[in-house]
Length: 340
Image (cartoon, rainbow, N blue to C red; front, side, top):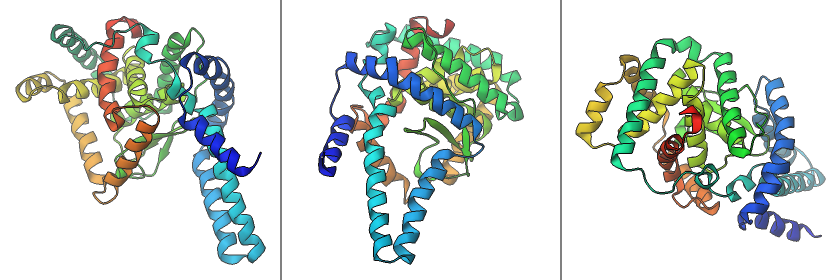
């Protein structure tokens, strides 16, 4: 098979819709459990980002060959770049991309696709506020950033993922790699998962409560939930049900923030006034961190590119999928997931 044919195959695997039943058997039944069992151990064993190291090597070494080597070295560097890009393209759907081809999470969880009525939404908002208030006293800043809080978040996401995947909890890393402050926030994002190594990362510029909430989201990606709305919802529901109060606080704060953002101004003010002071402080800290690092020159173009990528994977709302995660989390809670 020629290289052109391999490129065509890679693009087809990444972009052409698979039947949901086939994707579930191939991805959830075989590929994801086997690969995550390997990658979770690798990620936990390394104190630094393996994805960053591998990506840096693929960029720096061939670049040095181009700049310093002779004609043969330059040809070799170009072949290496081409081969690496092709390999990554072919592996993308097998390691992560097939997660976009599964049946919708609401369908697999038995949750209605219809929007919740106002009364049900108010009742759930009150439950979230109650969980936020109960967990706030246990959420010291140092504890939120502690490795055992991240490990607890991983266990809780794995438990819920096992329930949603049919009973077998996936192997998740218990370490999330913190990137230098502003690495992602300057582009408008707070976390990222390597789709090949399933390695979760969080921007080091986030305050502790926001960082732990983003950790839940990235761990949900690692657990096989590729769509943004699904990763957001699974992370929030798993966090709310977590016995570790630090994790529950981070999830409740993020979900309460999403609920508040959707309210009309007078209702939003009343809802925020009912929050514990600690939660209002942590919400302001997260907003300040995002504003401090965001680059007005870089963020819009990167966000537009990622929006296009999400739409190419079947996520019709693009970046709006993040906001849709709040509604999906409420619908999952309404059917009793997360111990409700």
